[in-house]
Image (tube, rainbow, N blue to C red; front, side, top):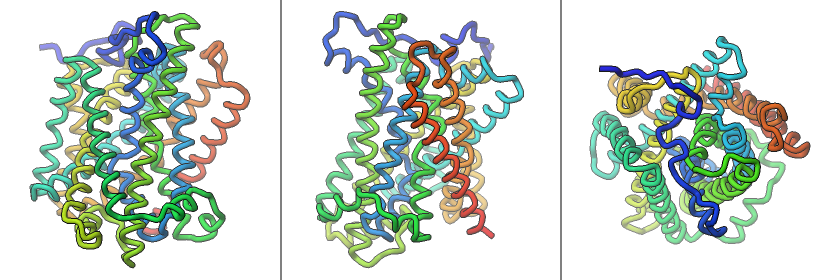
Length: 441
């Protein structure tokens, strides 16, 4: 049996779904927008994954609504980088991993591939842990068994992609809808202050001068942009079949950007909602120590006086975890194929990608028990922070280069904005790493 296949071209290498969704030229604006909509929502799930929940909970419970402005700023940065990513994929007809392989020497590519695989594994760890905790909270399934159950989504992904990429997008959007409804209800239950929320979106100097607030703010910013999302987005925008002309590509970038920005605004609402609920419930109730998902689950219903509040929280967590593991597995495939130009049979590839995160999680749970989960979650976020710039900097370099992008090269203003964001992310993640290491010593 042949498990491995060599791809014959870049256009084949990233997905069986390449240019599988037609976008007829005669479509109206709204029909074209609908046809292009989907990839942005697959990307958005990375911005509301369980790895962000603890940070948002800590921000709300400790500092009320003050750090809502950090969520907003980080979301604007994410919008810019994801726009660069989709533009790279459409303009060059290659994803970010393929571009790295084409223009960097083999040694650099191997380093970038290993770092990206570590980031995907770290992200997947957080998502597996989130799903396992949700299953434990909802159905009292032991964490060890919950971790094993999360492997089943590998087969769900395989089934849906065989049915068609649109089916996968529909499932992702449906689960995002579940998360949005759950937190919409949580906000109604918690009765937050509208004026205080509006004030929270206004940046203020205390964030920089207060050490505890700065630490959590850096955590929010550092964990916002997922490295694998930059690789994933540059690939899945190519699932649409549009004319490969300058006019066709320009239109594709326009509609893909609208799709991405709408989806990321929804992701911002989810992250802001977690913080708002934590502020309106835990900060208001004097519980400034809530930073772990299990604590929030146990306290929500008693403090709000609503029986189903904790259950809604756990359902949203399960939906977020499952959504994120699906897209994380896809990103693993794209990175492996893009950097190594090596293809596997789909079921082998997905099982391998999932095993990279599943096995370390099982070992930690077995050796350290449920308490080790939170330590593993923290470690995964540090790994993500360390790797992020290794994806952002190549992306900015490629999209700033007229020889690679042609007429789609970044404008002077976009170049300045892109390098500013890349520099901020690099500095903040280095500082977050220093603070984290200090806390361990």
